Image (cartoon, rainbow, N blue to C red; front, side):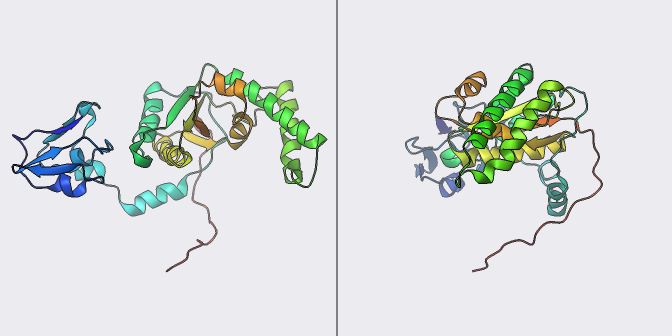
Length: 273
């Protein structure tokens, strides 16, 4: 429940004005929260100038007061940081510290979600990575062989990928370390799942920014999602909760490559109205 300390409340009405569901009202010159339509978004906590609002549903020790020098990022710096990101597929033989993994997940946990559902889940894969890797190669091989054996107008555009999956499996089986074209011998993967695809996608994007900020590298393993998305054995192994969809698989490690500059992109497709 969200509540207001009426001893601290100064009746500024900022929480009332900022509440997206109009669940706060003024009573006897003090703010009161009805907790009827409340989304638990925390806008009231964030905006109160005297720290009069709190909740017993979340850990209030996580609340940090705004300080310009600790919170602000120059827009030019942020844009360059985004432009400089690369999908990394060359990793050092070095484990990722647990503290850094937790920071990456924090970036996902604090990402906005629709109706503040906070429906994003994270599966951190380290010890079981080889097992999941082998299973994924096998799944992709079967999918590839099925497509190649049943080519038609509807699936012919997948033929190139089907042949690639079969070849990847065969090469990996011969030499798993030398020919790992799925996880590139990275020490870590984080699988993101959610009830809402947009929520999971937004969280994954923020997690990538944190990964880069920590001096790590990552790439989004689309082949894994293609293989695992409808495979019950793999979903069970990953302990994906019922009702959730696989959104992304972030392969993470210390980069064994150093990029020197940004790259060009297509002109933006913009409609001004």
